[in-house]
Amino acid sequence: MKKSGKKNSESCFVLRAAVAFALIAIAATEAQAISLNQYLEQVKTDSNSYKGSTTQAEGSNLESREADLLFTPKLFAEFNTGSDGKPSQPKMYDRVHTDTYSLGISQQFDFGLQGRLLYTATRTEFDNAGSAFSMTKYWDAVPKLELSLPVWGNGFGRTARANEDLIRQGNYAEQYQASYQSTAYLAQAEAAYWKLSAWADVVRIQETASKSANEILNYVERKRKMNLGENADVVQARALVEARGLELQIARNEQRESLRNFNRFLNKPATTPVDNLEPVPYAELEKITVPQARPGERYDVKATQAQLQTAKANAVIAKERNRPTLDIYSNYALNGRDDSYSEAMKNAGYTDTDTGYVGIRFNMPLNIGAASDAKSGADKSVKAAEYNREYALYAQEQDWINLTQNLSDARDNLVLLGRIEKAQKTKLDVENTRLRQGRTTTYQVLLFEQDYSGAALSRVKSAANILALQTQIKLYQASPEEGK
Image (cartoon, rainbow, N blue to C red; front, side, top):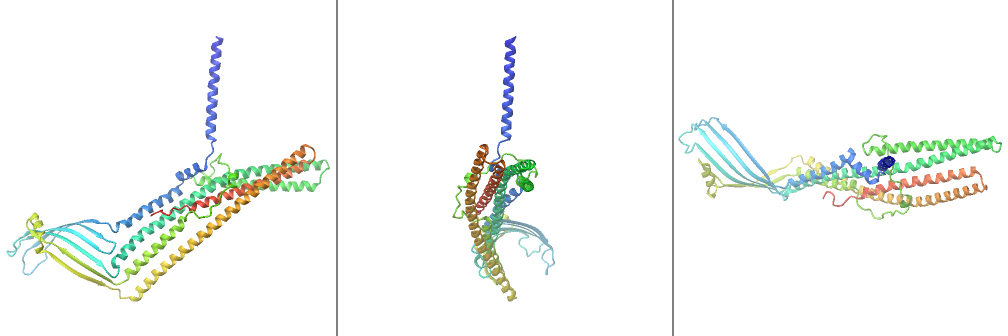
């Protein structure tokens, strides 16, 4: 019986240990840090704003394929049926009925030629036809080729090619703008992540500084009660406590704001708690390499190039639309007729009954002044787009110079602030050693703690500034083949 009780006790111990280990594993899983990459992936998955801009970019890229349809063959078909009973003199029939079937292929070529190759079959039937009609019911089979070539307005396909550019480049411009929005959104999300992580350190440092200020106040109040200190020291210490309390409150408010901003990128409730973010990599930030060459153009700048091409295409269309038109055209058809459809088709294979002609069409606007103004307006629109493009390139270069210089300065500042923090920490450690040796006062140690907290706080904010600047570099990663 004793052995059995011992075994049961051991089994219970093993069971409790397993449960404890399971709880520890669950707690460890729940406390696992949310990495930056995990956060950004959640943003891509959960943010409607990001999904909206990326979907818009994908849609605009696909819509640009509409330009490919301008110069591709098109299949067309037509059927109509009807009758005509209008009187004729002399009267030869009461009414004629017709059924017409057409099937063909048309294409516009980029050099301006427009062509149609079609086959038309028409069934004709006369009611109460007179004796003059050898056939009162028959089929007409007509294979036909139609060609037209503009040589002045829209000469040799200028408008058609401009329409192609207008569709393609207009969609590229929308794609680049949407891509810029999604890229900037991810950069803002990354900055929000690091700010929340950094402000956890800021709050911790401010809490330490506030605690130290209260200890200073308690120290000088004890000294005054023992008539070993001045009342002015107490007033000054209370002012320090109030100042540190305000700074702590501001830090906590900014931390809550950072949390709301953090959750906004995830479409979560503003106050959803977040724990265990990646710590700010202070040592790595002191060693960052600032890129000298710009990795690529920003998407918003690439959009100005597409907008320039769109303006040029619009100008071509406006100019060609208001020019005189001179078109050369020709039609050629073979003709077959018989009361049998199959015989009519056979007869349409001979050239002795063919039909062919060529011609020209001319059209010119008579309001020459309006046409000239429209052309001038189109040229000014192109010039405006060129100005916008040139300024965008200039502004991008200036932004890059400012970004890299600010990043370099911030890195150097972080290095110096790190040294200052270490110096303040060393000074504080030395003063603590002197305190233990009875060679200084607690008040002096508390003052040094304030100096150390201030140096640490400056270092945290400098690191947060570097992380925010680094996210801006990602705006310049646009691929030159994007949208091509």
